[in-house]
Amino acid sequence: MKLCWIDIRGLGEAKKAVIEEAVHQRVDAIVSDDTGGLALVPPTVRRVYLPRGGVPGDVAGADVVLFPDGGVPAGFAEEHPEVETGLYVEVVDAPTLDAACRAAREERFSVLDFRDPTKIPLEIVLAAAHGAEGGIITRAADVQEAEIIFGVLEHGSDGVMMAPRAVGDATRLRETAAAQVPDVGLAELTVTEVEHVGMGERACVDTCTYFEQNEGILVGSTSKGMILCVSETHPLPYMPTRPFRVNAGAIHSYTLSRDGRTNYLSELRSGGQVMAVDTSGRTRMVTVGRVKIETRPLLSVRAVADGGEEVNLILQDDWHVRVLGPGDAVLNSTELKPGDKVLGHLPTEDRHVGYPIEEYCREQ
Image 1: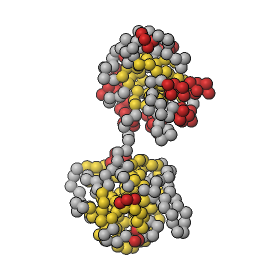
Image 2: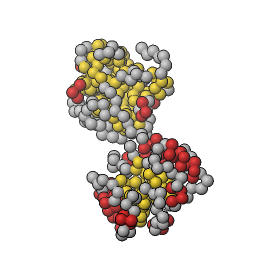
Image 3: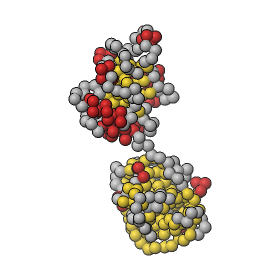
Image 4: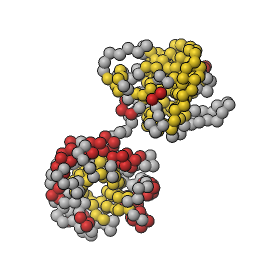
């Protein structure tokens, strides 16, 4: 879970309401430039004191005190052993970037304020501090920027400090920080029938990401059964590999997205996201670059789980279209036959506009 620090400096009448919301959302810290503001914060939330001008007065009630990049004053730690310390670095040029790198490597907390909108300085700090034990907290202007900061260099900043513009922002920040993609359970399915079903439209999902060789997306004709379609990372006899692509299936098919939601393949759009899944069930969200929908001959694959759950996948009837089986086996769709084992996922919920819901629904 990424850290969420709420900055209440400069808040007026909304301060109390923002603190109440932040505490309710279990944010990790609240930052104030006076200890009077921290007095409103319960001890269940880390209270961070960022004094005006960098010179602290009475630090009573503070759990963490932040100092400018000049460092912690001599003797402060001995006088206040109950208080943690960190540095606040405003990065505006090469010297302050160097200071940010030092702070990230050496301090318990380093709060970094990058005034340049590019994220390259943050990338440099994250690389310089790789393996360090301290926490890097990066200032974000809003929730949208926070989401970007969480993903820089794939690892992202340890946390974000954000000043809410209104009540509700703390909730949205917490939701963004918690938006990790859970793994999915995969099941071995036994193919029972393979049938040519004529012509129809199929979707190739081209993403902005290279897939691994044991990775693809889950696709199925019903919301309660999907088969793992592999990406085009494996050699083909007549064309180069396209490791960003999954030749996924007919346009009516479901695939998984964030928060357990499904999308039809026909709904995916450039700039959207789809869930990538590997043969161990590990997941990640990848960005869709485009979806190619073309008329092709189609093949229907039916399979059954050990518990009797039936799964159907309609995909392009072509040798280079493949699915994954146990042990990372890559299976050509045109060579599938009854008895073959494939990997799939068996959601238990029915769906309404893609969202899981407990209701009666029969798909056949």
